[in-house]
Image (cartoon, rainbow, N blue to C red; front, side, top):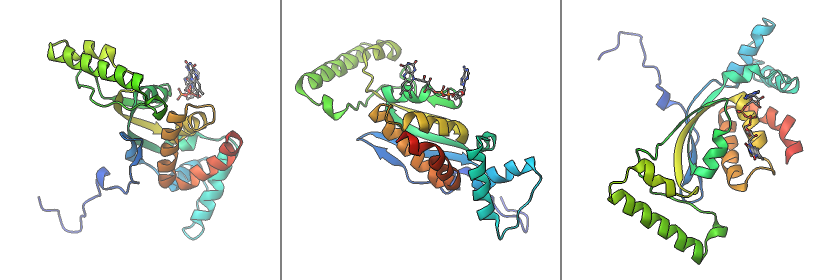
Length: 222
Ligand SMILES: Cc1cc2nc3c(=O)[nH]c(=O)nc-3n(C[C@H](O)[C@H](O)[C@H](O)COP(=O)(O)OP(=O)(O)OC[C@H]3O[C@@H](n4cnc5c(N)ncnc54)[C@H](O)[C@@H]3O)c2cc1C
């Protein structure tokens, strides 16, 4: 199809600049599937409050000051206008920690419809008796599937270290809350690794907001 003169093609979502996927362990990863907004958009949205405007020359500095102030005063609604969709592959026991964060949307692979083929255990569990137990479970799962037992029943015997994949769409305000709780010394180590990846990718998309958030909240939690 030919475009009319003077009309350019808008970059599609997939053409947006996105940070590199962060790999975790042998099988896990966190990547950004899509995102909406920027530090500038967050600051612009907040400015409706006072009706103030900024010129291009001082914009970056003024945005930074405003974002610091928003975080400082716990005036966090403007951060709800920054939204990220992550694609994550993690063991089920880590995914369960993500799913406890109710303010956001999830879409997960279904082991009723897909055969679970991947498992990742912590290094501490790498010993003869655990390896034997896992082999037995995988063998039994395969036997059940080969005997036409439905996937939704056969999966009952799978361990929590079975890998799952999901999309997670979350706004920046809830993501702050997630990071405070899950990149904390109180969180499980494996989950914390994923939270650190979420934090690092988010910082590449919303650097000013994330630095302001980190300065205000995270120092005390380390
Ligand atoms: C170290 C650690 C240990 C944990 N241990 C356990 C455990 O043993 N058992 C267990 O069940 N859970 C446990 N949790 C889960 C925890 O209780 C929270 O459910 C989870 O971290 C999600 O946090 P959230 O509710 O702040 O996030 P979200 O669900 O994303 O909610 C974001 C914010 O929205 C508001 N909100 C959401 N829903 C409601 C609501 N229904 N009513 C009022 N306000 C709401 C709150 O302000 C909340 O902070 C643990 C979490 C951590 C980090």
